Image (tube, rainbow, N blue to C red; front, side, top):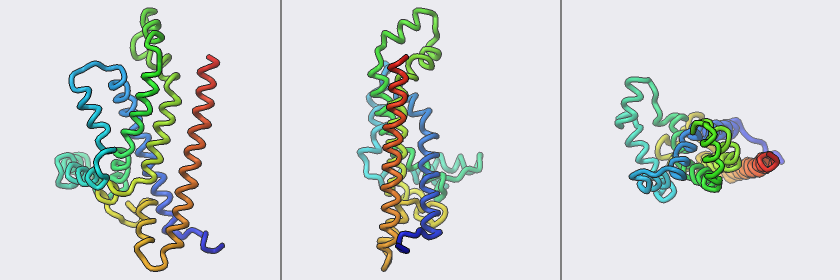
Length: 233
């Protein structure tokens, strides 16, 4: 069973993947809720365009998405140069860039899940609260948000799982640097490219499966608890 023992390099890749996935999910959550709310309840010109842009990463090859991120957020890109020169923030070939790439790839899944939850809420409940004098922000915080929590959790889990398995956009944007940008998927790919690396690839594959299953079970558990609480209320 010695082949199951993880090396230091493998543990580093696992910790980095968890950190990247967690940061990508939490950082994109506020924007995800806002965009989902706009798409579900908003009536404005360009709504179809916004919806298309949001879901574009699902259609484009991940390598294309990563290349676009490199053009925009690279050291010579319009956004990347501004961040580097004025704020000292460098994303390309850094773990923060991997988090950005994972957030972009998982964003459509998060938005879709939250949007479906918002559309399932009866607008009459929100309208009733509004007629009692509650402002829109208070209505959302006290009425809409508790009802869509299962959808938010499901969206977060989907985004997290996508981030854990992301490879194409990440390796294109931030490369495959051990200890800095080498995520779990990139480490598995590296092992498959070297002689005798099958054992390492299998170990990390089992870890990836375990993390994904744990995330899905946690999602079902928390969604059940919140759904039960909302039903009782």
